[in-house]
Image (cartoon, rainbow, N blue to C red; front, side):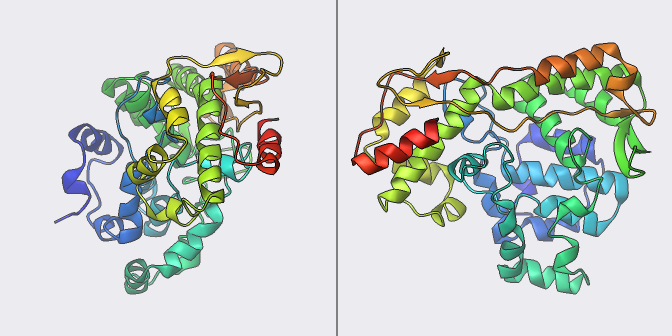
Length: 358
């Protein structure tokens, strides 16, 4: 019996069937390892699912995302090593996902946790046993950047970028229906890009343009005021709890999000968390707001300019070009806040907090 697949939400199973009609059974042994199963309890929304600032209440986990990426890679390559690299790419994801990048000050690149991938794989007896049995080296599966179908540089289209676009549009932000997902996915093939690399690409101009329209909306959601505020707030709460020895950085990799939320709700930051959790809208100013906690910085820009007939769609379609330009022009200069301030524990810590906000 599969510890994972047998209990997946039916909507997710139907989505998986679009990505790969014939689920590769060999993948289940890898999925059902302790390290990957722990990713079931981490939402891909970086914690934003827990606040009324966002309407989504569908829990699509980090493991769901990783399995879906693996299915896309398998569908287009039927290569075990590339597929496993897709499955393992987020194995080092902590609770609240990229919020920990914000905690680490890595809100512009958001890759600060990836260096743990190799360590986690090597530390897993189950995974290492399976790799040894299948004659696969760790170095062949611990870095999905090696395989352009699995991952590549923005604004190219990869399995990872395609997956989180499709699942977020379908499950999290309700921008697409299942039939739209099928139309997009079935139009994709492997083409050769400007660097003479293999890349996922579109056969039909209209579908490529519609994909850009959806992903441009998603790109703004990923870094808009409410998102940056939420991720930095959670990061700062975690930083304070860590500073007060209430939670360790190791806990962020071993506990469930529900466990960490319970710790927050039992801490002196419960009131702050409650305000954020039930907020309907963030406030913004062009100048520094007084006597409140605020966030004032940019975030990683995630956008896609896919290939169509071997060329970037922005070079072939003025509509797609304008969509991308409008997306990239999104203003992140606002001071974002809600009406509260952190409890001040000491003057020195308050100084550090100010540096984070600026």
